[in-house]
Image (cartoon, rainbow, N blue to C red):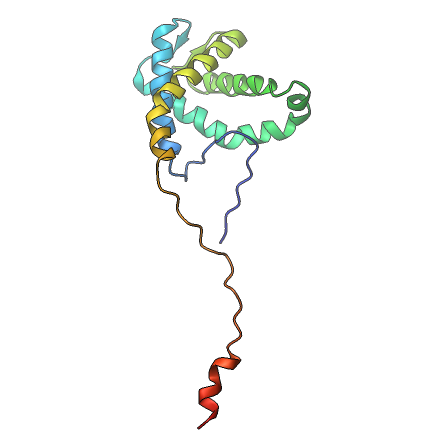
Length: 159
């Protein structure tokens, strides 16, 4: 059975894909570092950061495409800046779901998004470099070429 992926922007991996758990670990470290820098963002410990990273990643995989479809007119009108609001919704929803994770309001969530994105980008840099230098795998053709085999059987007819 074939799987089809609809991409509404970004590279939000589903939990079945290879890079999902790597991104969760990178995001965990980014959330934990952000919480150490800003006292207004609280996760408790590294386990709270891991749970927050898992929930944010799952919401990014499943809820973000839906929110993108709903708010596509606002995204177009604001030249993509409405993605910040979608990210804030996801962070505040995560804070509502986890008792150990808290973010102070809209602007706290915006700051959280900016810092976590920057730290994630820095932490993910070696993995991006390795993915860039991997050899490209050739794609298998979906259909084989049709070959006429009637001329190949001329030797069989001479009997």
